Length: 302
Image (cartoon, rainbow, N blue to C red):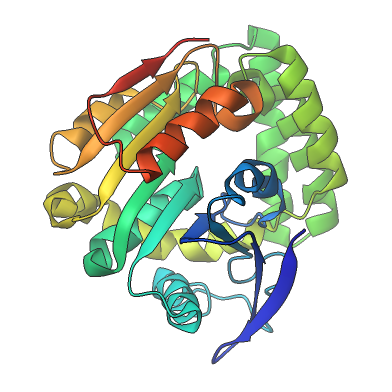
């Protein structure tokens, strides 16, 4: 059902995909370094009401770069890609749905290009300060026994060395092991949902670790600015977390203190990928928000 297109920009072919009819709704995938495919499951229920747009962010999926560097993967290039896509689609303002890193990207874009964003859904937004990053790291390890934590740290160190050496094949094996044996324990509340995710993750694996290596140095200086510039966001914002997400859900309340038009929704028995664990509630909450229901905060219960 997804039509594939390529938008030629100054330095890369940007692969984008569309399905459905209606107002534009653009989805931003996580990573950095993943591609759009895993978000199709989230986007498909919206295709009856919206023209849903997904795309592979630069360097990943079907949007290859001839050279990966801090210049070609600077956050300003990511902004320029989304702006190019917005103009190509003829949209004066966008509605955005971002997950994980995609939520961080959506928030940064909403600050920088405040007049171009009408509504934004931030799902499982990652930590925006060093203190909250430490909370996320602790939550990631919480389900593991001591021996498992030691094994995790060893694998993570080996993965880092493989990335630094440019051995992407070895990195792939270590990363898959870390994700499917350890990460999912804190990403999901439901063991069944975790198992299904692992099966799909192995089948669709396309993660490129070099993208975050080059991109994040240009993102980190902006994190301090985020908290000072939140009042510049004119869009309506939905902060959506699973109660059992390893990401610090308390961040939602800290953000709402400065976001002029924000609401919070927390889904119970749900982790970092809420559309897989609480699909009906997750989709309905987002539809209500996009439909103009911007009332009091919600706490949906499974």
